[in-house]
Length: 206
Image 1 (cartoon, rainbow, N blue to C red):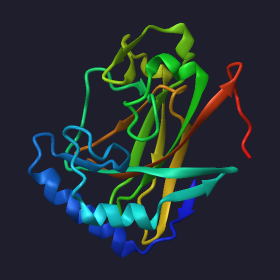
Image 2 (tube, rainbow, N blue to C red):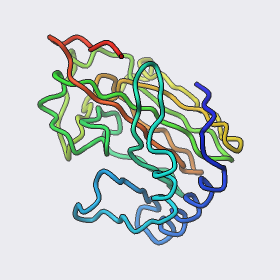
Image 3 (cartoon, one colour):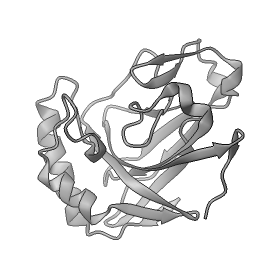
Image 4 (cartoon, rainbow, N blue to C red):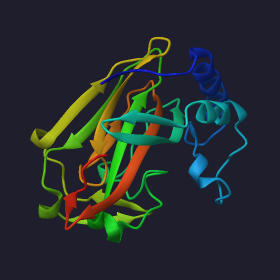
């Protein structure tokens, strides 16, 4: 989907430049700002440009729900894990919720491509997660079986032009997904909404 962000492009570029300096000194060439995890061990919240962006863009209204700012993250290199396809356990980080409570909650993620130079690919598995073996590790719920390439679907999120950005909306605790980097890495923001389900069914918006 296309979004016209209610902030100036300069705020986005300032956050990009701040994270780029941090990522250049990071062992994984990746850095992020997670305001919902302020005070947690190993979390750097001393990122004034990112904080200004989050305070200027605290939430976005979409589909009858208000999605809160959760993070902004930049990578200078391709990131790859052993089991990249996963379910998020919460919105604020994706991995600090209770994996055992996934069936009782709905976690919606709005992933915005903030890069002005490169598209961002979001991959997901076209499977019923109840029919495969999953493993909880570090807050994420991972898909641990060999991946059938025929089951992989991809959404390409176009690059940003000034305040006009593109995003993908997914049910992050029901759809096995992963960001698919190339050598350009990524620059993304995550907004989220979460709430209870009713007898396993999704609560209506409103």
